[in-house]
Every structure is written in structure tokens, then in C-alpha cells.
Image 1 (cartoon, rainbow, N blue to C red):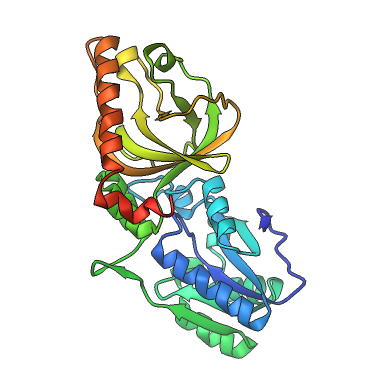
Image 2: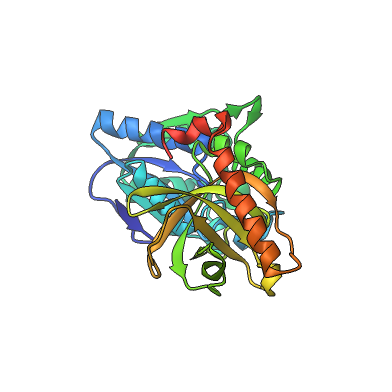
Length: 316
């Protein structure tokens, strides 16, 4: 997959394009991308996902939970896994946001990208004062010979799927709902680094991940997780928090993987979240922490035997 992060977006062949922020790659986003891929395959076009960096909410600071469901590396990885040919993270700032919608559509999308098919959500807004919408795109498409397809909102349990809804589910510790909206488990992808190494002294060696600082983490606590390393999945239990028992103060993501003995510092691991076990808490002693970690591991193992997990077991 070609990955473009600057203004040099010109394409040399005709394309099918979809527009949006695509934070989380949820059900609605997947509908847009799969429609684009289908049109590209049918018409012999190059498939393009056109997004923005940074996310507009960081530029305008207009979100209650100003954080990303997926960090940039995580989003790129997910889009690449869907089979997209070109992924564009177009530089976003206030000047770009003030561009007239007609200029954005015609000069950037239609001409520079050689767009022949454009796929957008019904509620997609763009350009100065958010004046652009799919109706304008359809009119411009007729003028410039571009087929514009709008995708109606995707519903789940009688409510529209959106990144905002996913964020709320994560904040509410409703991991099951978040995962269903995403069509895949929420995950954290990052480099493994050295921690305090207390866990290995009490029989629970952990893998510590550095994740994107702009990412929306689930609330501090302990979760049943599975981690992907070197093409293989490992069951485990993950703590998101600051380790108050040993006077921690910095947000960390540490995972105890069952039956895992490797040293993997400097390598990258993807950890999928399935179930909230308990809130983070401070224990009177390291011995008490050790007993609780054993109980957490058993809770995670019990969850992986439930019908709730069976929904994901064949894929993750």
C-alpha cells in the first residue's frame, strides 16, 4: 500500500476514492471502504482512502474526549489489511479547513487524484464552514464526469454507528459494544519497552507497550486480552494504569501473557481487548498484589470459556 503524508497526492492512473477521518475503522467506515474497493475492482481503478492528519478535533479542540480510537500507525495498519492501494493522510490545519468545498472537490479530489468514483457517507461535511456535503458532490460529479456514491448511516441496535459512539463505549468500559461497533476488538499496538520488572520477580512477567500518546485508552483497570506476536495469538490479562501499588505515576499498558517466555524488547505487539475485569486499585503489599494478579489471570481464563468470547474466538 502506498502511504502519502504530504501535499504530493497526484495520481497517474484513474481512481476510486472515499473521504473521511476514519478514526477506529468502525462498521460505517468499513462500508465506505468496501464499497470503494468493490467499485475499484469492477472498473479497474486504483482504490484510495483520503483522510487527514492531524485529526480535525485536535485543530479545533471541539471534542469532549479529545483522543483517537486508533493511533496513526494503528489506522494505517488496519486500512492496509483491508487491501487499499493508496492511503492519504492529508495535512490538516485551519487554512486548509477554510478552503471552499468546490475547490477541494474539483482541484484535489477530481483532478489531482484522477477520481472517477467517489464514495462518501450521507452525513459527510467538508470545506469552509462545513458547507460541502454529498449533494454538492453529486452535482459536481455530474459536471465533471465523476460517479458519486453516498452510503447511508450504518445502524447497530437502532442507533447510528459513529466514532463518537465508540469513544463513549470505551469510556463507559463497555468493551463488548465498542468491539461490535468496530467489527473487531479494540486494540493497542506499540513497541515493547522495559518496565520496572517487578512482575517477573513475583511470577507474573509483563510486556510493557508504548502506545500513541493521543490514543483513547479504556479506563484504568484490568482486562482480558489476547496479543498478537510474530503471527501467533497469546491469551493474557492487561493492566491499563499507573501501578499505584509500586508508586507508579505514568500511564502504562502492561500485559501478562499466559505461557509466554520470550524477551521481546524493541519489537511490536498488538493487544486486543475483550472484557473488563476490575478497576485499578492500590494493594497493601506486593504479596496482596501477587494474589490479585493470580485471581485476575483466572478471571481472564474463565472469560475465554464463555459464549461471549465465542463470537471472536474463530478470528482472534
